[in-house]
Image (tube, rainbow, N blue to C red; front, side, top):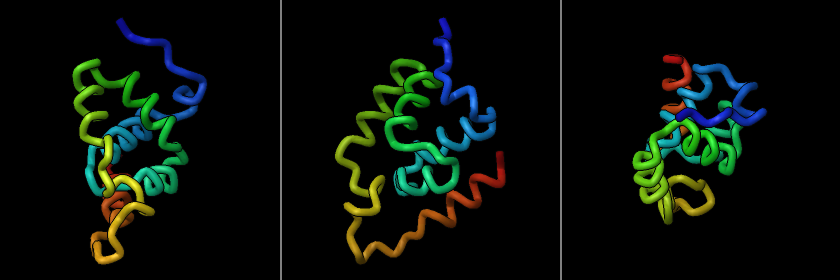
Length: 95
């Protein structure tokens, strides 16, 4: 049974929803980068993931994201050299 999409989800193209899901699964792409690229906040990412994934996949994703410092720029170590914006740009072009 498919859930009715929220008003927010109706404004996103299928490519945007796909991009959000792909970036959300990537460990090092921050929620801030997702917001910069697609305009979707962390709570909205969670709603999209809940609506689009199967319940077991959503639970697995939430378990992975809990406490993951790489998903928030403010929690990252300043020594971390990885630049997630380049990955987000690359992913966005594939939609």
